[in-house]
Image 1 (tube, rainbow, N blue to C red):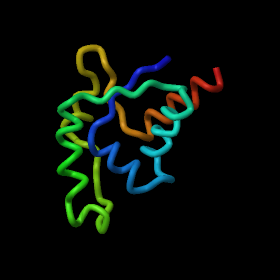
Image 2: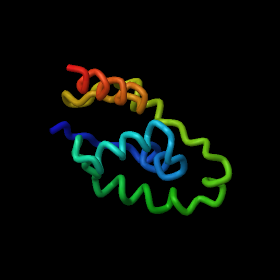
Image 3: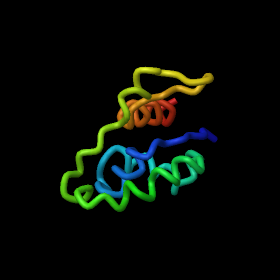
Image 4: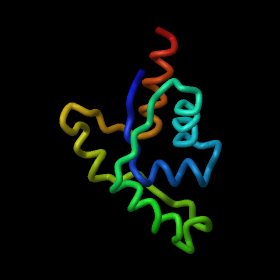
Length: 94
């Protein structure tokens, strides 16, 4: 089973827009197709982010560009939600 770690922006985006690409990733978790891991630091970051007053109004969360620029960290691929879903679709067809 594929194991993933999602950043705070993807988790919050999934909560805000249940039909968006980040939410589709969370659906894979609930379907037991992937296993989600969340670090204590992500949980710490998530708590205040969810309390931002303008969060629900704006919905303008972008994935951290500095992470995407890395492309990989210690052998772990860093991809956007769209790229991840493409990988899952390819795996399903294989």
